[in-house]
Amino acid sequence: MIRLEPLTGHHDRNGFDCGVQALNVWLKRMALQHHGKGISRTFVAVPTDSAAARLWSESGYVVTSASILGFYALTSAFVLTGDLPAKQAKRYPRQIPVTRLGRLATRSDMQGQGLGRLLLADAVNRARAAAQAVGSAGLFVDAKDEAAARFYQHYGFVPAIEQPLKLFLSLW
Image (tube, rainbow, N blue to C red; front, top):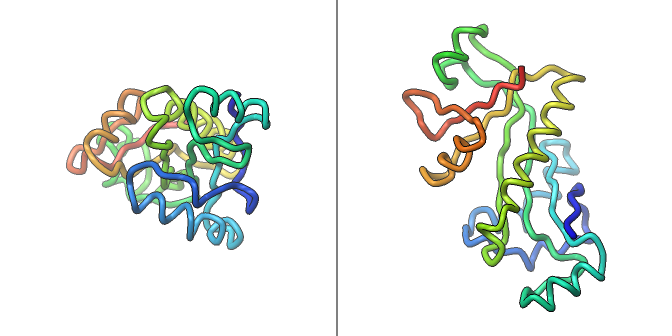
C-alpha cells in the first residue's frame, strides 16, 4: 500500500505536516530545488495507487494518490573523525566520506506505525548501494533531539561520545 520513490513536482508537498515546522518548510520550499541542483535527493513514501489512497481515506486519513506520507533526504558529505564514535574514529583517517541522512519525517497522523522504520531501512539500503559505487564509510545523521537520537540508536546508529546527537552507522 506504500511505495517509495524520488520526489517530483507532482507530489503534494503542501499537504504534508509532520509537526516540525522546519521539516515541513524544507520539504515545501527546498527539497525540489536541492534535487534539481544535485545537492541532495529526497525520497517520499506515497500510496501505491488511487485504490490504496482510497483505503487510507476510508480508514480516516486525508490521503490522495499525490499525498506524501513521509520522506527522507540523502546527500554526500565528509565528516571529521572527531564527529564519529571513538571505536569507529580509530579506523579512519582524519576526514572520511559518508552519506548524510539530512532529514527524515512522517506525517503527524501516521507517526508510531512503522513508517519511519521503513523510510530509514530504505535510506540505509540506498546508502549501501551508493557506497558500492562511489565509496562511503557509513551513514551519518545529526539527530534533532534526544528522542530522534534514541530512534536511530534503536537501529544500530552509534552516537559520538562528546556529541550524542551526531550518530554514525558503519556500512562496512
